[in-house]
Image 1 (cartoon, one colour):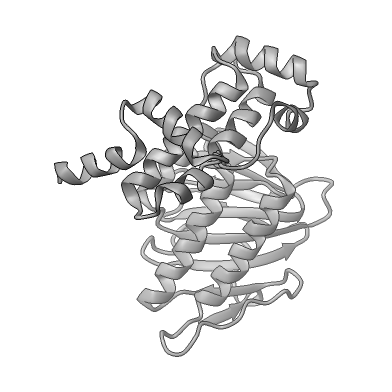
Image 2: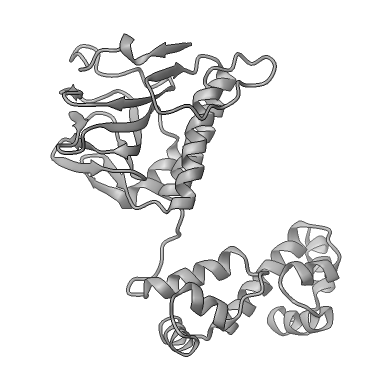
Length: 305
């Protein structure tokens, strides 16, 4: 059921602090001073905000954070909260969602907690911002789906004052799936790393882990890390205990083992998908790593079933 922002109060009443946690409500606002929401008793549901233009200021308990374009700020339930247009920003354009967070999201958000269940994820890269914006637009459209036919198409209309309530079960689940994508793209986009590692080396390590079958070289990885090949190789080996090409080979072999375990792809295709140009070379190094050739490795897993 779509409603307009004009139908909503500017400040939440203490007796009705927020939508109940069972509902999923999605909106997009473009507010100017003196817009502010104050919930002295906190909210019963979680609030997710994603700023696209301008800036906001969000406070929860004793914790406070500004919000600018590309920032995801999440307010957990049960803590007094206040948010408004940031001083000097002129206006605050943002998406927002009230809902009950899925259990897995709290683990992804925990590293970004600033206190009192306020989570601030900032500096989202540009490419990811585009996907997050698309997820919010899809969320707004899916919330209006009746369960019959196809969901409404997303719109590229300027940020305004639309609000949608996901009434149907399918609409709620689709909206939550899009919100989960938002949380993954922002808060869970990197895995925990050992402390002290150079961010440039971590970036190269991420590239290898994300796509071990790609034609990585020391030079290409060094370029992504903004280092010379010699400096990159030295830092990588010093900080991770092995060379970049050794790390790449191990990642490719792990990838190949997963493909052998989970697919029926021929060994030759597993080799190619894992970045090995020669099936013979692949079989040799796979045997060195796992003690048996690729085909025997797969057959051994089947015999154990």
